[in-house]
Length: 279
Image (tube, rainbow, N blue to C red; front, side, top):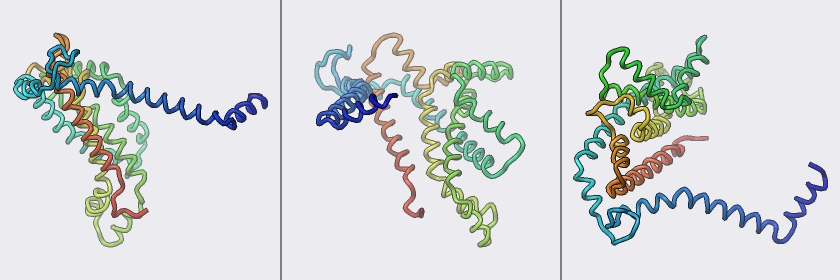
């Protein structure tokens, strides 16, 4: 960049209308981005209260589709399957992620780096490859496809996300906390459960919420390893969309948006430092 070009840019910002033009452009671009992201969501929620079955023309306010949704046994059963699979897989993934992060933080061994690399592979691997590989594994060991296979698959791709959050929390921990507990007479077991574990609670809760959201939302991996009786809500929704638009799906999506916003709010609250912590 020449000196004259740099001088021209500096002079532009010194002009009376220069900063105003920049602010106007940045503000307009930001507004367009937010409109692109959230306008479809707003319309989806709005038309979940529309009387029209087509969903494209507003014909009046109604709660009919929410009532029909709560009486749809197929969707309710699929939602129950998603909750069951998500709860079990989240509990297991949270336990494995917390334990794995603590072991990687506390102990150093020759294959430490290699172990970390293999743990993070499920995060970067395309989901379709993971689904196919898990299907081959289950068929190789003659494991029937059903609830157990889906739970194993969900644990496989969710626990690395928990582990990453735990590692970030552990990296910011003051090692003197554990040393002080040991100096005061606590055993290593007591120091972990009375000092370390309370410090890790925000990361554990955030990781669990993230794992649950990933499990509840997954389609690609689940479609490869599920059975007829263990199909989750995303599979049922996709099957209904292929037949045609259904106003019940608008209502279901609106409820899903509310649930997502609640989980995001809880996660953000848990990320805030505890009032009892000192800097």
